[in-house]
Length: 128
Image (tube, rainbow, N blue to C red):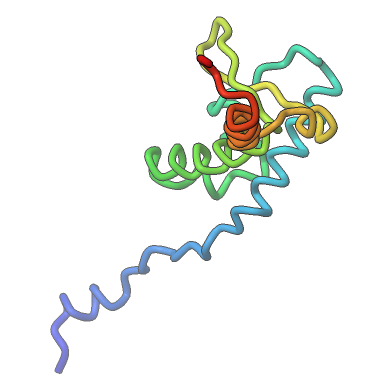
């Protein structure tokens, strides 16, 4: 016969397991929402706290505070690397402004500048 404590333990619900997040999908949605907000106000600064209020990020917001922050920073870092976001400072602290895809294309990756500089230096050596 099973003890009442083991029966009670079996009846307790187990924590819901989250399916893995689709990071590329979340990145696209964050970018799209940021563009939409920029269309309403081209001076808008987006903050992490603002993002956590967006409906499509409710599952991320439900995570542990550190997990949610890490996931958002991962996505924002990808947007920064693609030059779709830029870091700004305002009265609320650090935030981001969005760039259009066309604006982002104008930025030459640093590695290309270094490569171009190295090639130019081999053709026209400095200090000679």
